[in-house]
Image (cartoon, rainbow, N blue to C red):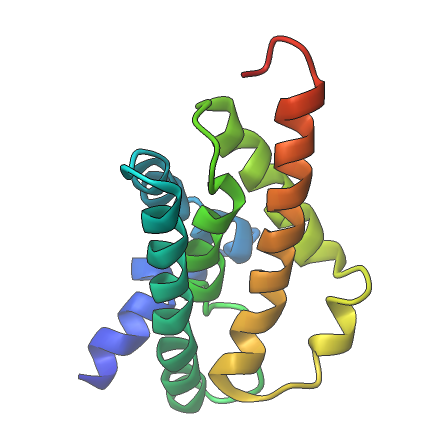
Length: 152
């Protein structure tokens, strides 16, 4: 069971990439995000994203204990399981690209208040910064698709 949890946490090997493991691992979230975009209602999208975040917390927490260290870079479940948040309520395929880019920007640069969450330990600590990055990306994604002509 530990090997399965670790395998899911490292994104089925994508988090072991020698180059940008977080970004490579986040790619797994694209088909999940596509699926979320096609759910029948906004409430289904929100509910699914909540479940994905709640799944991320224990997976990342257990994997952190198995691998050792605080928030090992190879753990990417937090990235790919929070990415779908960035497209809640959007239908354009371009929202996948902008959501991906915005999520990565905020996860990598960790502007306030994301940076202040880095002291939190365990699976919650690993997931919360990505969750907040995804929420900020969601807000910007909605602004982008509302105010930039031709995107929707």
